[in-house]
Image 1 (spheres, helix red, strand yellow):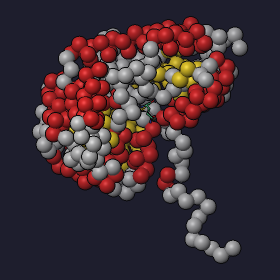
Image 2 (tube, rainbow, N blue to C red):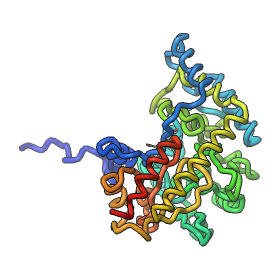
Image 3 (tube, rainbow, N blue to C red):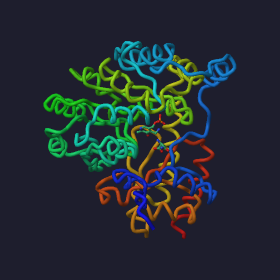
Image 4 (cartoon, rainbow, N blue to C red):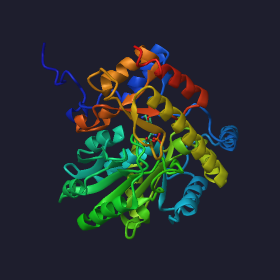
Length: 399
Ligand code: PMP
Ligand code: GLN
């Protein structure tokens, strides 16, 4: 046959290492086996009724065409107000806030806008899966620093490893706190070192704070946005999203906040990715951001109960549970109980063995060995669903 010029795999080489996301794989496995899905992190209840009513009203009142590329003014004002209210951070809603298609698009647009081929991105592993993929899309190189459980089970990192990850090609540090999948909240000392390195190497910081409101009362540290540290506002692009805070992960309304020059750069890219998104959902998220403190406290308290309910069940099933200080997730170490080689094998067999789906943490590491025996369970589910999962997990040892 004559050469066509097409290779067997049309995918560009830099994206070939990225297969189907673990979330899609495990959610499909949950559906096909009828297992309780504690893999992909999404709540099984709806968000605040005021928000849902506002979305329905917007749909019916003609807010169904392209919104402004930067986001509707009401939502940008609400995002700015919420950041002042919760974190004491000041952003001009007209030039320093950008609405995106979830935090996912903000992360992708930030990597494509800020990184050139060969630039380096310092991040912590385990990392959210889109980090590696979007850094690769930009032709940049990731420099992961490994988070490891310390003596008390909390995750920490070696400061020298972090220092060594920064170099002349470092463009930015991509920091997720509160952290998925570990449930770690970065401490003031850790943030101070990160900030110091950003100053020394004159880099940007992109912070993924989608779990900013989900830190539990027994956490060893409160959540501190990196942008609040001295001199960091000027170099930080802060990303968040409505999905986790308002239990609407399918809406994909996120935002980025930062100095006008950074926002303008990210907007330049965003306009060619999705252009705009979620017209009738934007005013609804603005309503949600204005809810009183009780909403946020109750959300946190409910998730903390859920964490305890599931963690207790995992312990009873013989797994070692690492402390989770925030987010939707808790990690279990399967070393003591599992016969399987690693977490991937364990998670592939778990639905067949006891009807529960979880996610193997090792897929979030470059250093696969560091996460080989760690498995992530999502607890953002109704109490009765978690109780059923716990009942099923209790049969694990017997098999
Ligand atoms: N970052 C982290 C750490 C996440 O866990 C998620 C998943 N929600 C996202 C980003 C993506 O957020 P969104 O659904 O708003 O795109
Ligand atoms: N953020 C969610 C999680 O970590 C799911 C995101 C996704 O499916 N891409 O489970």
